[in-house]
Image 1 (cartoon, helix red, strand yellow):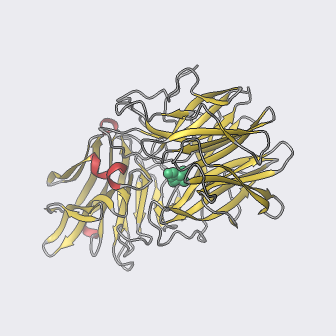
Image 2: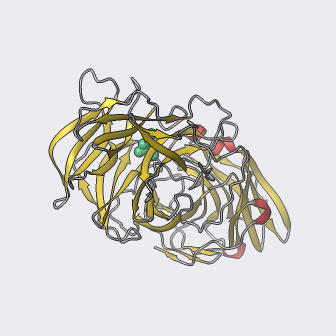
Image 3: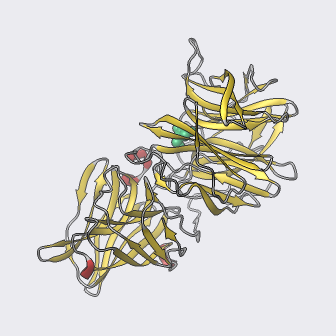
Length: 504
Ligand code: 6LW
């Protein structure tokens, strides 16, 4: 068995779903209130994943304005059938499924069709194409039956492909393996004429677990796989480098090997800031059903302190909708917007995922162009928790300071007068976030915070930290030009913002 350098997709990429076509694998993940939505990553070996497009690239129909960061696009599933790729996903509101959509394409790089709503309750929709060509839709919702063994249930209905509607009777398949825990993340597989339902239970935090059930018919009855949990790290103790393992999707290689992609987190001192990441786990089958991490029983390939560096091109994200921003090499130009990061509109904010513990992210701004602006570099968890090194003009001139919010409370650091070109940056060694400003007049540490304040354990929510650029000002103010935008490990910061695209 080969050890893989997990995570195979670092940074906030929760709820992995994967399909294979020939030798090509395609992976989709959740994007919440970020735009563009649902990145599509491609791989030939399940280990190296390249971003090739987005399912929700330019659509302004997406009802994300007003959305909390943790809501929005949840848990897409990708499947391929007879030359067509299908993605189903949920839009969540108030941490509950509000609407479920289906979109298709023949080229996973896009464009994808305008999503059509499906009449479906709950979250974590999935599709299964049976050998006879029939398509089945499953999702997770609150239990509807009296006396159910769990608070959640997985339900199924047929998807009529020509009309893209759910048809026929509804079948409640399963209430989960672990009494009293909510079952979610269903995916169905057929093997040797038996149907295997894989789910997740215990919540997406420390008790997360992969569980399963089997049936002779796709519509059931399903019996809990008594080996459940099929995979979990909840019993491995706080020192285990990967925690919260669950939410699996299985894929078969052309050679007939089975692998699972799961989500997990890498806490530092019990707190994770990188969000839920994608991990690759060997799998197999026995007469009971799928075997995850055979012989190991845990996700391997991550050792404590393993430096996971990245040279991934940035997947620049805005919040809740498209933004007229220009990225050209390491220069990012942001027309300002009067929308605060603490609000629920579309701020002038362009960000990339923090995908390694120790990093430096920074950019240079010209104080001569800071007028009514409040602009700078941000470590962003959600609208209630973010920290930014920012420039603002006071009566006596431009100052740099840290301003942000921690769990909904405003925080502000001391103000340092600056002039000329000023570099603002945020650095982390994994245990702190330090914000600095530097100019010809010298370098100042503006403020340092423990990493715990930006962690999901403290802030709540479903995302990880994003590192971004913000330009808050009346729209009539001039654009803010960020030069020398860089992200990298502190010792060997690589120049270049990555990409040369107009982000629209
Ligand atoms: C996802 C669900 C979950 O849809 O979190 O707690 C949701 N579990 O599986 C958002 O990632």
